[in-house]
Image 1: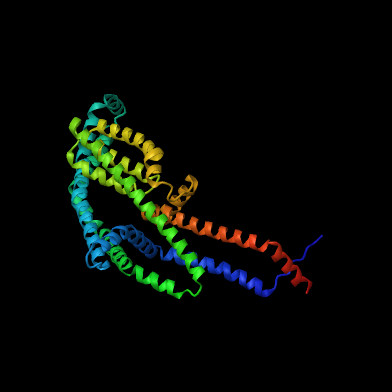
Image 2: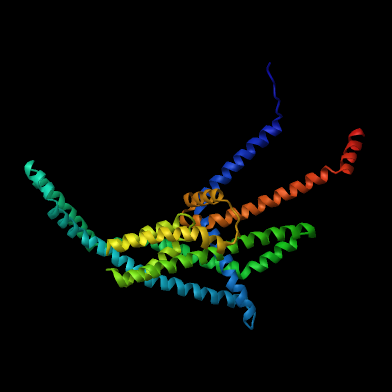
Length: 376
């Protein structure tokens, strides 16, 4: 039996308009991904800095929000400057050291493997092997001598990053200063007091989720960075590890630990690599420590500090972080979880209101009124 379904032209057109609208919205989001990253990062930093800004505004005699924001910015700039001058030079030094030691490693490997030499001599492969070894040595030596020019070649990318950072800082400053004014204008638009209070409640819950996540994640990352730095400090006392790696270790672990689930492991691998350039034993000890520490952090430190501010399942967190990393890189991985927490707040509010409306519509008096209207 054939079933014929008739769809009027208006419904057909509206359906395809919705599909095309979603496609265009997705394309617009993809095209403006860089701008969205900057805006979302600014909003994220504005919420993070709103905590000290609000406290300073209450403490200062003038109660000036602009002054409290400026003081907070001075602290941020000092931290960024300290990071640049204390972390970048040791990393560059270790990279140059690695490039300079590769030729020696090649020579050492060529001298130690006598079995390989026998095979090479037996089959008359020595000219080819010598040529390959010489090529590797020349390439690495050239890289070591031209490491400065290699950094100059990425100067354009660095400048672009600096421009983006300046734009983020400016937007964050304006959001902190003008945020209360914008909220006041927003609430002034409402005529329905109940709806305004409901939306205020939702916005406050979302703000609480983001603020709780920021404070908690910063605390967890600070503990991880400090602990990793202390371990490297102990390794400098017992093994051949330079003290210049202590602060970079703490900074690398702190920054990358801000990316949930993956960041800490990536930071440990990077630190382990730099330690291996100086002492393999130190690298193995540090990686073993960090594996144990990750278990302690995941099962005790992080749950204790976060205190269920986000209240997302591990699957939801993994999905959010994966989407954030693939769409917007490391920044997306950092802001993906609070965004997912805000979406959860909106979904919960929707289902609560839907349930109330359903219960209200199922009351006997409402059913009776519907029957009367149907009889008419």
